[in-house]
Amino acid sequence: MACDHESNGAQSNAKNNYGEILDGALAISHGKIVWLGKADDLPHYNKNDVKVIDGQGQWLTPGLIDCHTHLVYGGNRANEFEMRLQGKSYQEIAEAGGGIISTVKATRAATEAELLASALPRLTALHQQGVTTVEIKSGYGLDLINEVKMLKVAGQLEKTLPITVKRTFLGAHALPAEYKDNADGYIDLVCDEMLPIIAEQKLADSVDVFCESIGFNLAQTEKVFNAAKKHGLSIKAHAEQLSDLGGTELAAKYNALSTDHVEFLSEQGIKAMSAANMTAVLLPGAFYFLRETQLPPIELLRKHGVAMAVATDVNPGTSPLCSILLMLNMACTLFRLTPSEALAGVTCNAAKALGLSTTKGKLAIGFDADLALWNITQPAELCYQFGVNPLSALVQNGDKVI
Ligand code: DI6
Ligand code: FE
Image 1 (tube, protein in one colour):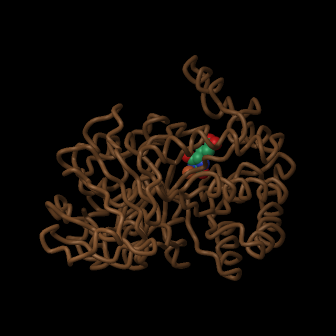
Image 2 (cartoon, helix red, strand yellow; image 1 turned 180 degrees about the vertical axis):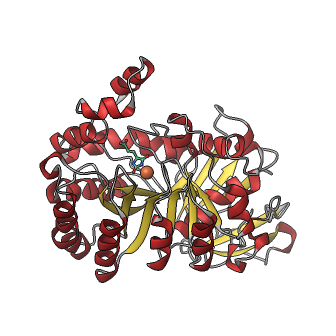
């Protein structure tokens, strides 16, 4: 797959390279890959000492990684979907108490158990399509108690399903009603009260900000990045989704892992990402669901050797789509990624976007044995066909879980 982004050169998103080993074999010990190569070259082993899984000629890939979701939330927004189809705009719906704030109300009203129960089918759907690592953001609590509640639920999900969960604190997602007209006051709350406690209780790995005209401005975003840095958390940004505010260049200055969405990203922003070795996370589900027309600058990302990840962005407002395989298809049909690039986007480049590029997202010695076995005849099938689930086995940390 198009994974050699470490070279950080123009060829880094090589268009048609899966790095395949035909008639291959792979050995696992203590949850790690310890050998891989041609089956004929497999070192001698004693059949009584090992458990053998016969792949029967199917294709084995790394377990898939969904590096951007908001899958813990209360309620849903199907009513707003209907309203939009009857001609109401996103703005009108938000003014009538809908939008992100309606999900905040439902999330605050839900107990941890209720949030867990509603998130589980969404995560299960991803898992059944080969996802072994998922990132889950907070951002529908918007106060300490409810942001902590969401992050705890994300942690419980990891204990409920055999899946690795990375958590991201997105307190700076939207302005809660009680801080209307006081965005700076809310950012102080995020930086001075929420973030230190969340970091201390180890409830998150990263911090994210919705840097946008309808989100938070550059100065507010920078405050959150500074606080994240101070507390040793890595940084991500929702930026350049609806306009080009320059959030990506700011994120690059703070050595962020990724900028996500990026439809409006400029070449200057891309150069900054390349210099900071950041990943661009493409979210074709939100592009599709919002009927966005501005395409992300794929050709320029290729030109500057910026690694591209692909994720679902599962959320109730702009991407209620719990299918990583659908995202593979959309990344190719809507964004014109090659299947090799799209597959790199849900494996090695998704790992990079989560700071996991030395342990996950590749079939390589020393990497975690997270593996997906597919009943397909060529890798492009994972991007090409949709609606039939070709997953035939899933291994997480060396254990067969499907
Ligand atoms: N960008 C998005 O597309 C989602 N959040 C964000 O920062 C929207 C979330 C929602 O509408 O609930
Ligand atoms: Fe998002």
